[in-house]
Image 1: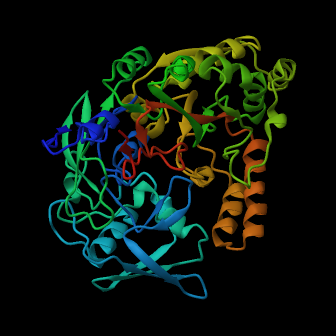
Image 2: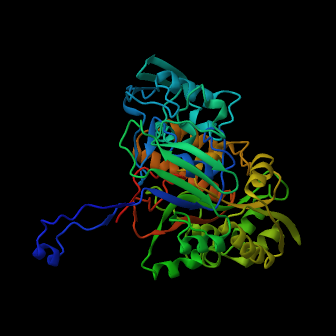
Image 3: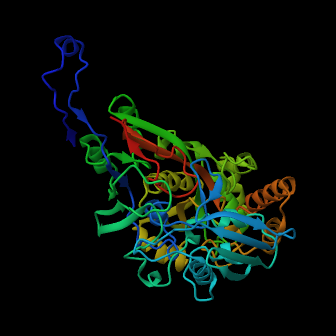
Length: 496
């Protein structure tokens, strides 16, 4: 919007010549359109596994007791402080005063108790119920105080409470969050045009620092070519996870744009169904891992962006162990292992969800497997179908997906998780890790956990998904990295 000030007759000619008179000025833009490749299946982060849910609502609409910052630090959110008992079993959270939900109702300790008890209930649909497994009881001491007692010490408890799956909701609106999300964040849900976009608007009664944006629209553009056209035309102002890395050099050469390259928590894997023959044979899983050339996939599917990994852990984490050499590209070894397993002319299904890294990477992997005598029959599936058929029904041999949840190696301790590892020794390592708070001991156990899943060739570990984004050069405050699956708009603003 343009604001004009009157230039009066008293302005001197000298001032006019020097350009010191008040001139028309443009106010900074206060709305933004953000591109996303995948549309969320619903908008309830406590009842869905899709990363796209958190990409819209995390920190924007919903908040937890704690939250992640742009650099991955865990900081206070709805809890302004907390006390931890000496035995590490009791956490007393002191809640912020004056917080309201977007429907105007007040936030208090009963909402925290309801949300956590709901998430850990036997019939809970929370995709990350394991986050709450160590909670023994939740007590609303008074309106501003919550006491959570654990059954055993958990060194990651405050970290776990920062996940999108642990946000606080009100009992009055919990049943309709999927289509009408009501949270305590700086933006309130406005509209959802299915197949197109979700719009959020600034919440005037927000308890914290008000955002500088009045409106955020998340625009869903699954096709990389269409995404490129939308950014170039200005129909999309920012695309934090741009799906066509081959276009980044063109954006870099254009002063209208800023290219943002960072890291994510996305361990990208060729997941294998460990309980389905013949993939229940470690030799076959090892053969598949040795058939794969990680760098060729990174170059071909991501145009050189991405970091090779040899286990399910982020390379930027100080506890990462580089195990890529253990499953190095070695077609001869792959053939030898297949021979030892007594297998030849093996045919496996390969189900690929929509992201470009999966579709492009899948074609490359299929060609690499073919070289060692394995035929991968590719089926492209939409995201909802992948969640239903692969993630829930476990109806697959191979699939490619990025696990973007923060430090999520604990998924390998879940017997019913979709790749069905179910190993007692690994679960024992994780159990010990969860009880350990000493940093040095935790580092040792994390290394042990990484080596265990690499030794067992649970999956073929490909690369750490990069965060390659593009934005209008006048936009500031976007996260360069993705310590969690989020497009946090709370500190984003335009400059003149």
